Length: 361
Length: 46
Image (cartoon, rainbow over all chains, first blue to last red; front, side, top):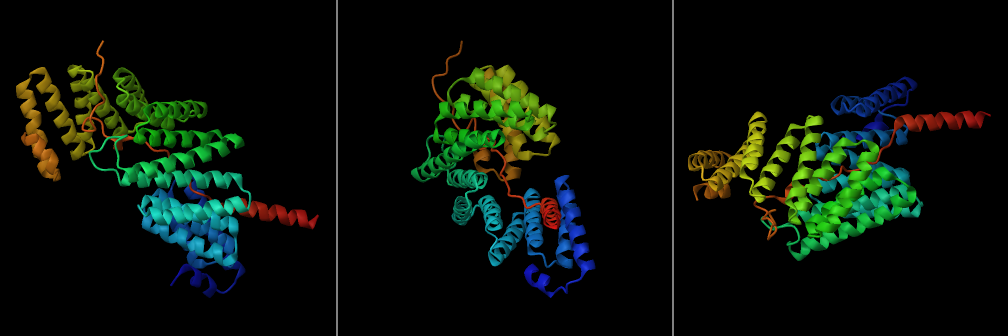
């Protein structure tokens, strides 16, 4: 039974209406607090009770879809955003249809269904243009950029480096940059600094993949500035990490190390162990490029310890491979052999065939 | 000081380490909807 049919089969009753609303409002309150599991339970109970108010039902579908999106259950998110789209079209709610299209587009993008996502983004953009909703237009353009960025990244040749991707990839990435620029023009006009921050971040990443590393730095510097304005440490951390990546490809390894150190500091403040591990790994690699192998070993060991704590065998394997190389450079052959053997053992276990072959060499 | 002569290989630093900004999901708030409905009914009764 589809939720729509369920709604129409429920007889109208004041008590039932109150009950549906109460359940849905509790679901909304829980989702706002970030308890999406509990929120979904209340929303689903509200759907079971049903309502004749189709605007309420649309809001419920939309919020359940978003809750599943946050929970990374994208199949369920897709299901509910689809229900919302069908409903808003049925009742002729244009603004509601634009929002449902936007959410559906984001979900399809995460699922790698880029062509369908583009159709949704276009509908989102068309409606918001028709009803002269500038905020909505900006959001549709940002989503469009994200879809093309993800599409470009998904077809990148494995092993290819930023700036050296096939034509199909660069076409998608250039489209992403165009949409981000169009978004920026609107959010600047609206004075929406938070939106500018997000767009500068993703535009910087797009320039990075296109091999435009100076433009990438410029965008990430803007992102960093805005993150600091808002005291948004997670965004600040992302900007430092992305700046570090761009400086690596500009060959400015000392600057890269400075930015990765800021990333590490913020990851520790935010108690994000996985990001802390990534920052240590990046620092280890950067000091390898600087031929400061003692420091490289220090950071790769820090990475190894966190990877072991998190039971991340792939990360552990990478750390061992890097440690083997750094010890080889220093002429510590016993240590190099120890880490090469560990790398081989982990590569076999994780089924990393190329890692296994590298280790055997 | 050390002057790098070439860009590093992706074997050393992989591009999948880039950090993306979050998606912006559209919201349909029931609280706002009912506040607006309440306000509309108050306005029409005046």
